[in-house]
Image 1: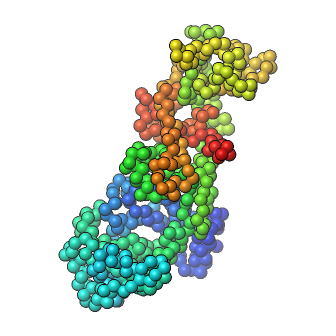
Image 2: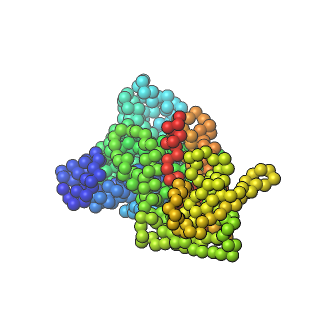
Length: 559
């Protein structure tokens, strides 16, 4: 076993076992894979699994992986999607060997189609789409030979050339493989290989008015690129006989091998580009990079790290059988990563002013706070303190139960890093709403302990009012209320109305850094947050990436 193969065995699965066997038997010398998205939308968490698998295997075995755009459907493909796909793959930490388009091979693919016609294994069918569909039969009934199936080779060559030369309208003819209309696999019942589309292509312009279908393009593109292992999700398993048939009946530069693995099915998420596009186009989200979307760009904007996504893909592994992964697994991977790297700060999202009446009005002092409690290399920051501070409104209750260990009239709490304070009075506006609290502090409790040894159960965070940074905070949560939104008859009914809550009056401690490459922060007791793309120095905007604990687990237990 090679050194790279031995390293790869640490995360062994049936695909790696297959590659080990191919290398040991000298069936392949260099492992070549590919990641072939269609540029008709943004990549999502499901694609991340395929990216990690294809690029990871090529890396571990000392081979290479191509990022190929399967762009055979010009009506839906755009440069925006191409750019986003490249950006996402790079952000996840992977480098491609080549970055071809399937359309780069259109001349070769046309030549392969001609070869099949000459062999009598492809023909031009002049039926319309509905007639072709009816003739293919169903999963329970066989197909029937169509009226054009036995056209001569010469006539087929003439018609196919005329199709290319723009002599027909869209849908007037198609090129079909001539295989077996009685096959139990409906994909083998003379599948369509080419259709006429008068659409300008993003890469080839108006050179072509006929375009190959994905099933014809896929395997041949793999063969042209020298791909050794074509790794696909399970929905392509029934297409593998066609993949093999095309390669077996043509002289290709190489002979790739297709193998299928289970796609990622994650609770509370969608991986259908069509449905994701509907969310965007109907305005339910702000765009493909909305932080509630489990697109890779949306996850990046929300504050996911590439390491957490790669670790998640490693955690769930590669299997042959579909299963649904709990959202908590992804969230755990993220929390574990952010807990190790996130800088700690204090922030108050729903502020309530506290006036410490026995603290001198003109006095200021500074406390030291660790940037990370487990990593001294992160250093410390200065935390200013003055007479007026903000605390979370949830940290005060006027009529508190006995086990409420935060602030209430007559009760004492510890301010993180600072002093013990006791609430003396509540100030309300004419409508009876609480405006502020009047408290006193114990000067002997500096640093959070008292020389008389009295115990205080509650510790709350705070921000100095005089030094606070005003900010907006987006509290993001899961976009859907049910574990399997894709099965919902009406997607709109399972949208979470509280998936985004905007807090416009948040207060941050002064040590918050606002940079173009934002840090991941843990706002103490609140969760993990990151600066949004639209944030400015004048008006910071932060997105909640994740709470510190899984609040949905509590909901599930309660139900």
